[in-house]
Structures are given as C-alpha cells and as structure tokens.
Length: 317
Image (cartoon, rainbow, N blue to C red):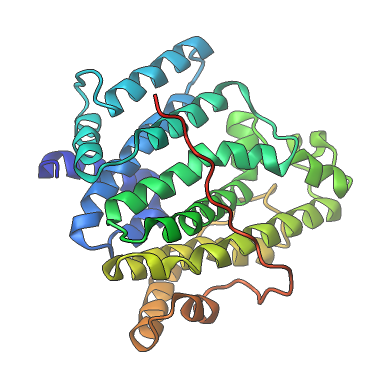
C-alpha cells in the first residue's frame, strides 16, 4: 500500500471533489479505505482532463489521457504522487488492466461526444466510466465470489452515475454543453433538445426525468441485492453509499423534477442523519436489501425487475 503522504494527497482530492462518496468512504475498513482514496483521485485526475479542459485542443486532451493510461498501467515512470500510488494499488490488488483501458477510453469519448441518442448508447459509455469503477472497487475489496458480485457492482456503479447525470443536468449544460439524458427519452415526452440547452423547464421535461429516475431506481435495487457478496467489513459502507446517492432522488422529486433551474444538493446534516439511521437498522438486520428498503428515499417499485447482465468483456492490450 502506498505511503501515507500519497494517500493523504489522494484523500484531499476526494474530499474536495466527491463529498458524498467521501462521506461513505470514511466508514470503509482502512485496508480498503486507503486504496479507495487513490483510485478516486486517479479517476478524478483523468476526468478533469476533459471536464476542465478550459480551451485545451481535443488532440492535446487525448494525448494527456494516453499519458495517464500509460502511467496508470505502469508502462512509464511518473512524477505524480497519485499516479505512482495508483501503480502500487494496481499491482497489489491485481486491478484488471482491461478495466483501466475501459475507463480511459470512456474519458476520451467525452472529448467529442456530448449527446446520447439512446440509453444503450449511454450505457456503453458507462461501461467504462461507471462499471469499470465498480469492477476496480470489487478487486480492492477482495471479494471471494467475484462472479456473483460483479454484475451487481456494475449495476450499482451505473446507478450512482445516472444519479449524478440526473442531478447535474444544469451544470453539464452550462459548463460543458453536454446532455446525458438520452434523446429517445426526451423525444418520447416531446422535449426538444433546445429546451434543455436553454434550461427551460416544462411538465414534459418532468415526465422525462420521472422515467429516468425510475430506470435508475431499478438499478439501485439490483445493485444493493449484490452487497451480500462483498466482504462483511465492506457491506455497510457500500450500502450507505447507495442510501446517500439515492437520496438525491428525493430532492429531485421535492423540487418537482426541475433540475434546470437549480441543482439539488445533499447537506452534511442530512448525510449524517442518514448514516445514523442506516447504522441503527444495520445493527439489527444485516440484510442489505431490507435495510435499503427501510432507510432509502426510493419509493416501492411496482415495475419490472431490472435484469442484471454480466458486464461486457473489456479488451486486453
């Protein structure tokens, strides 16, 4: 495991840029918490190459991501504390190279892709940006039955990312001219792309948001169902992450699905209350599904179960 100085630098990046995830990471056992800081810091550094490009030409963004790919895979020396720590984590926990490739490829696709025609298109992107993250986290947790755990980890990773997309519609339009809501969903409800670009809320937009919230909530339920396959000392932290991220859906509904006028934000006091409530139920019942049903803000589902499929294989290079 990397030395404390590099872990602290990685932790600082997570504290600054991933407040909800950091809140849950703190309850992971130290053996997993420290490498999680390193993984997250790497993810964030790669993500910021594109999201904070600030006029950097696309070819330079792509070249920098290729540099990060080679540094992360240990192919070249690096002067970055985070990347050198990541190299050690990758080797120590046998993080699959294919997942690193999938993640960097997804970041590269953000350079020239800012709209998604179908949910399948968006899901293909999330295979690298979210599912690969879930696979890497499964590796560092030391999951014994990885075959059983991985499809659920992929579903939960997609759920977290979809919540981010649904929460951040306004920010993505203003800062990046990017829309992650599938165009087919907008079309189905009669929402022109220009309406989203102009941040014009309507009942039709609310209907589109309602549909995508429902789809994402099926992902949460399927993801939570796989927490039982994780090591016991990691289960509560992953469950709490699901509870915290899903609580953004309560905020979105509270503001009438209008994420174009303002962005819902989960306060520290609410996070602490949810953590205490989840912990209280967890001490009496170690069934993740039952506790999630009791604690989370998601409505009971009357829709069909989301079928989890094994993740697509990633390339070996």
